[in-house]
Image (cartoon, rainbow, N blue to C red):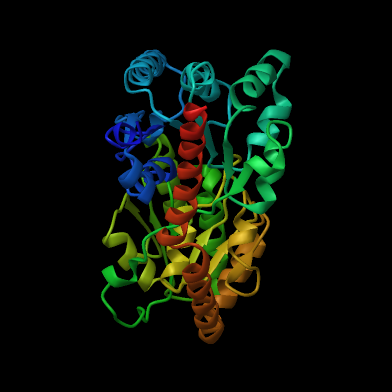
Length: 382
C-alpha cells in the first residue's frame, strides 16, 4: 500500500507560475523545487494569467471563464489522482477567495489534508469586512485544514477566528542566495537609489519620485532607478510627465521589468534600496530579501510583516507609508554616510543567511507538507 502511494503524486497544488513574475508566481516556482515536491511528488494546477500583471486580480469575463476552467481541471485531477494533500495559496479579497473556493470546497468534502498559505497581511481585515455568508464560506472551507501558513509572527492573529493557534505556522519567504550569480566588484561611485517591484502606486514609487526631488538637492548626481513592469500605459505616461515637469530626467531612469541576473547586478550596484509600500495586501516582498542578501541597506515601510524582516536602525530604516519627507531624510542619511550604509547592508546580509535562504524555507515548507501527508497515511491505515 505504501509503495503504491509513493509511486504517484501525493500533493496537489494550486498556483501561478511565471510569467508574469510577481511574488505569487515566484513562490509557486519555489514550491515546485522543495524537498517535499521531489520526495512525495507534486502535481500543479497552474492558475497563471499570461496577459501580464495588469490583468492579475481583475474582474472580467476572461478571468471568470478561466477560474471555472481551472476549477474543473482541479476537480478532475482531485478525483483521478486522489492526492493526500491539497495546497492552496488563498486570496485576500472576495472575488479571489470565491475562485479559491472552487479548489477548497471539493477538497473539504474529500479525504485529503488541506494546507493553505496566506502570502499577505490583509486577510484578517478582509475576513472582518465580509458579510455573514462570506464569513461562513471562509470558515467552512478552511476550519478543518491541517495547517494555515502565514509569513510572520505578527500575522498569526489573521487566522485566529479560523484555526486554533497550534495549526497556524509561520514560514518566512526565502530565496536562493544570489551573491554567487553576481560578479564581485565595487559599488558604483555614482550614488544610486533603486526601487524594484511592479509599477503600482501602492508599492510607493510615486512617493520615491517626490522624495527624489529633495534628495537630489543635497546629493548632486544621485540616480534613481525604477525597475518593474508598468500596470498600465496611462500610469507610465503620468510618471514620465511628472519627471519632465520637475526637470528630473537626468536623475530618474525607468528600466522596465528586469529579471536575473540583471536585477541582481542592479541591486548590488545600488547604494540604497527603497520600497516604501502602502500596498494593502502586502506581505513580505522578495525584493527586500534580495536587497538584504546582497548587502544593500533598505528603506521601507512597516506593511505586512516587513517590520519583522527589516530591523529599523540595524539593517535599514522603516518610515511610515506616505511620509515623503521621512523617506527623503533616511535616503539622504545613507547616501551621506557610506560607513553606516555598509554596516547596515552587512547586518542585512547576516540576517538573510540566518532566516531567509531557500534552504530554510524549503525545510519549513517540506516539514508541513510531509506532516500533512503522513497524517493522511495514518488515517488510511485505520
